[in-house]
Length: 420
Image (tube, rainbow, N blue to C red; front, side, top):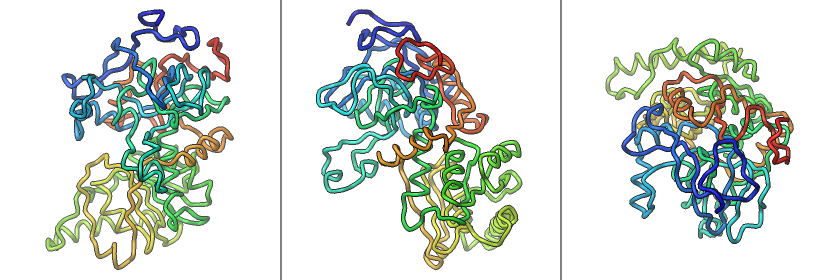
């Protein structure tokens, strides 16, 4: 160690490590609204272990999981790690990002110091029994969401990751662009392409909730490239128009309907009639936007409680509702008659495997997938970014914060910090 710490953006000599670093930190005593839960502090630089990599972070993506971390609900990430024996009483989040490999631990051969990388969102034990028996890593019992279920994520000058998380950064993308699509992109790709036989095929109508958000903006592009017909659900017309620009056939403004929430008890015929009228009206709007009376072959879900009843009702016979989250709540209801009699599929989907990550990176490198970064800020605005997510006031697409990068900097292998 040759210095106590370096100021943000003051790039040290390659491989030189300070004792301390700046990070946007959540502490239990600040749990609550994200804009108050996050604060930039000086903390210790983590120690690099076997198979691990220390990445000098240039930029970090913003995702909803660290809204939950800030709230301390539904999962207290600090308490869970302390119970497991961790010493730190704080959380450094950030589940994706871009940066430069700064140090490597024993057993690392896939990356070297100086490599420019994108860090993906899932980490697992490659030696776990289920992985050795053929499970994808993202389906392993050891799989964790990096920077949410683990500490020392991307909201810091130096992040601690597994070597399997490090992927080559496309030289044509800025650090901010590279930082902001490797959670939402692979998640959407796995949802739409990973669950055979329910994969997007030419002509398939696809309903995409939250079409203007990070996940939705990736899903629209992926569905369209595979020949599907994406239709977005949004909260206002401006966001709907953005979805059309990305390739959606059209959009549905969910504020025009009021049947959202838990499914009524089927014995309450009056309430069920009201709900069914609302769901059918939503379905007729889908037909209108699509231009024909066809149901969605795939419904891409992440909102959960408020929308699952409608998604399952609307989904085509032998179609699939595929879900990766529950931002409106976790206690979702399903009318099982539609599930079994129409042979529909309700599929959980959690992130993606390494091959899918590389496929999505290639799409971004080729220019066939727009990372859709609509907002960037500095490390001190990490809480603000998550507050916008929490209140659904964020712009369309993905968001990122700069950690050590300057705005618009691309990297391209030069460590001198010159803007490209």
